[in-house]
Amino acid sequence: MATRPIVIYGDPVLREKAEPVKEINRDIKELVADMIATIQDANGLGLAAPQVGVSKRIFIADLSALDLAESIRVFINPEILESTGEVVLEEGCLSFPGIYQKISRPEKVKIRATDIEGNLFEMETSGMMARAILHEFDHLEGKLFIDYLSSISRALMKGKLKKLSAAS
Ligand code: NI
Image (tube, rainbow, N blue to C red; front, side, top):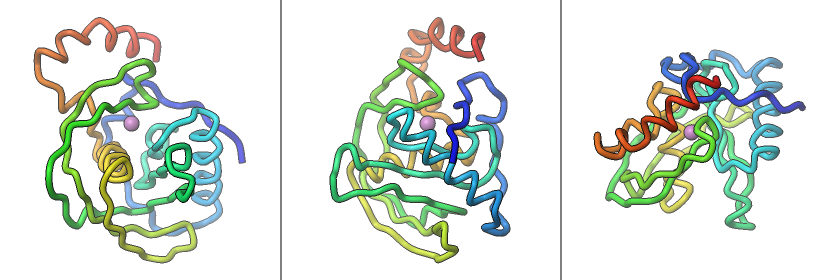
């Protein structure tokens, strides 16, 4: 288990549609273990495989810092079954260090995914977990949180984004 470098905005891997995981083999288990080490090191709430440069349909969510009852959850080949409501929350992303923006997304989500043991599970959730799931799921589609901003907010951030992508 080792941390991997987090890919920063500007890297083309963040715009790719990630490939489904065919088999949970040793490589995938190692990738997930490394993603867990990476998110803990970065104090993140969520991390998708493309953010460590691997275009595979895997993400993790770790809300244990906000809720002691929570532990790290692994989502492999996730499918969003349903999303309802709407809520505005401030969001950040490990691939956009220092950038936080208020984003509107569905309030509740129902998701189906495979866990690291290969078991299919379904989960219905709201609040920060729903937010993390929707944000991370987008990463697997090559979609980023800045895509939801109004053209005005994006224009205001242009300089910051340019700096990020120039450094990546
Ligand atoms: Ni992100």
